[in-house]
Length: 271
Image (cartoon, rainbow, N blue to C red; front, top):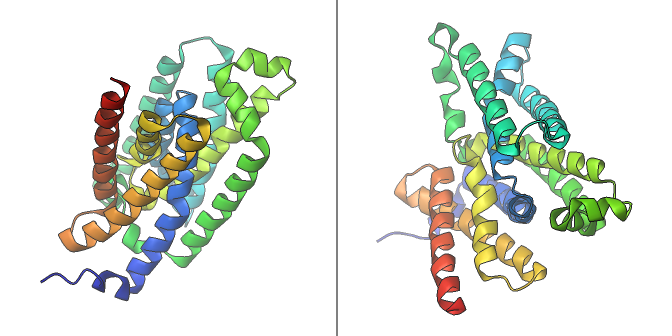
């Protein structure tokens, strides 16, 4: 018989649970704005840019590639945001070009000499290896994002509804776009080692998309998104322990099930 209470006896599981309880509310809240602003491709491109960030760190001889990942992601996000605002090409085209180029450069550098196997673990992530210092970084970005959200949520929401109208109300549109892009970049980069490049975008999008299927107003939209994100994270961690499956993919599977359940439930209610 399976002992469903044994998992929390291990220090690495408790650390993983703490990390999930810190970062999943961020995924839930930021995902709502990403969905509203139609930035799904943007966050996906940021995830892929992690490879290039690692590659830059390797080339520069940086001991901790996490730093190079974060710096590169912030620069990448700001540059992508700037080109997107210029309107010289469609948004999806710009993001696709940046994402493809970033992945290609990263793979080219990291695979030189057949050494890519050293970095392959970042593709699927490993939350069980998270350290106390990484948890501290998650706490810092959580606090920063929470303060920003409390102070600037109405402005961000106005941008999603109508950018021109927001500008006419003296809302600093460019600054809000840039700050939000940087926060997304920091959240993605600080989470990518335990979530994985291949599925980081899913954890940002799925809870918010599920919430959108049910929510009747903005408050419910955010609340459901946070609940779905945290539920998927905690249940995915526990199930991955007993099934011996990577935690990141398990969380995404649960989040996907929730999305389809809310989609069909929402459709039946509307009929």
